[in-house]
Length: 325
Image 1: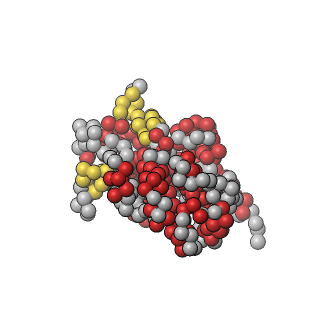
Image 2 (image 1 turned 90 degrees about the vertical axis):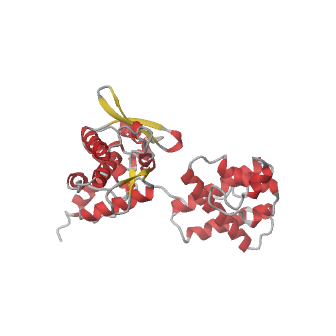
Image 3 (image 1 turned 120 degrees about the vertical axis):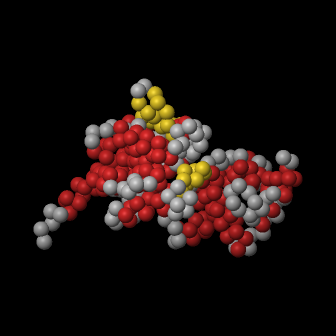
């Protein structure tokens, strides 16, 4: 594809944004470099979308401040923008926006579009946590959710198997919905799952015996065992209780989780990531090692895994109840 063709397609980029006026005003080289930042430099589609929104928001803000040329963006402008965001967003969200701006201008500098990076010296808000904010279930709640789920239909069997995968393998929902039937395979007298996690990591996990039973029952009812290249977890056809050919989306799974939580009378506002935290916490509670949990979860370091460890939550609650007033 020629550069001219890419520029012609610019309003419909894979990042889901329209080229801001500051970029188009800087010429075709800047526009092409801007597009390459999302299409060449960023491989994860979720990061691409998030950074696309962040970059567009900042550049449109600059236009609103009367900045007419991309080269006129200065550190003080970036600092003012980050200060404004800090009044509207959580620190992690602000840090993500600043990271996007820094990376974008670094890319433009190395492409000789900008002389220097105006975001280089700008500091974001301080943010340090020792425990994640993802809502978790107790072991008893998670067990009841799986045990009491209505599995009289293939959709029910699918939902139980999918939630079990997230719980027993600590997998992210994106990796779960990307599973094909062939990614569930026998090895060493056990069945395994091949999960494709963030940053291109392939995580092969042996299945817990309960997970194996849930998957076998679902696959048999769905009659998909021979469709090895097809998606493992398939979307439902409206309210027919039948499955379509295409895979569930992450949004589909989120709505399913909320429905199942409501059916189980779970008041905690759980989401897909809750099962990752629930599984890690239960594993550690039962004597698991943090370094093994790190490998199972596909984390780069044990500190990240520690954010999912909620064993101290029960201790805190018991201590609060010691107040005898």
